[in-house]
Image (cartoon, rainbow, N blue to C red; front, side):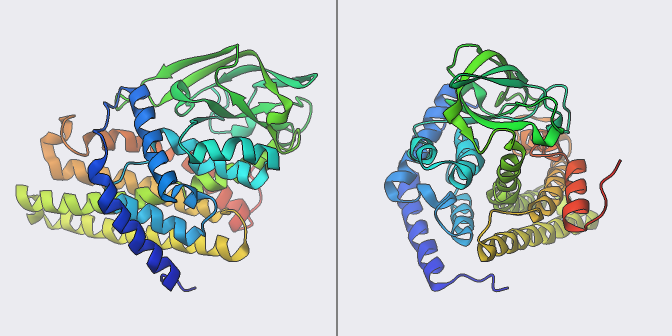
Length: 377
């Protein structure tokens, strides 16, 4: 499979680099990590700049290869991350584009692309653990609405979101994978309560969400009733397939910075550390090639990213943790200083073997869907 740029992709890369070089120096200062209204405004402002320049739709309408070029070049240039736009741009929006009706696409996709609305993800639940299909949040039909009662946890960006991609159980007696429905819930609906959660790194980008007889219009259902698990697999394929691609580029940049720091503080003299950094360099180069292969395969088949995204997610989660463990080795005692680079990143890296599906779940997906092994009992 040819992974090199086509002439059209080369032209896109050069044009994007030129635009980034002109645009980034004029951006306003980034708000404090704890200022979520400010971060929302900053992230939406960046998205609007992308929209006005014609780059906002690369996550959906461009080829997978072009999408990777965009992620690679924006990360290399130090452009803002999608931030509060993460859920809407990288998996809710693509899911609606793939599974929604024409009316739903018209209602939700343009505001996401223009930087007008933020989405959050309401999948995980306190009592479900890693087993997403064990969700208990209940929804029943009442006229033109679903009435939803239950709770969600680790709801990304809920405190500043306008909409939530929400999984609910609409048929309690059905086999658990067949009684789930995917809804788009307005976060300002009566009965929605958001309680921010503070992470080990001190940030609060997640929240608990409590739902007390929240009415969600039935027209906000994406896919058929009780077919939400299939729609969810589409969402998860985007979340695991390409959503972390830009972070691989960021990790390769951090690796280079670690090598510079090690040379300056004398830790480069340790051959074991040099071997460790060299192995990580090979690891992230391989992960980038795997990402290119995955999106090229998806493009060739005309489908959304498949189960191969779990291979990437599994290995990337552990490689990221290993990278920031190496950073702690480079920093020595300074790794306890929260003001030093990479310290907070090390704390946040601990969540990556849980976020977007635990490593245990990824092992099961790979075993069953790629290797064809029987399901465990």
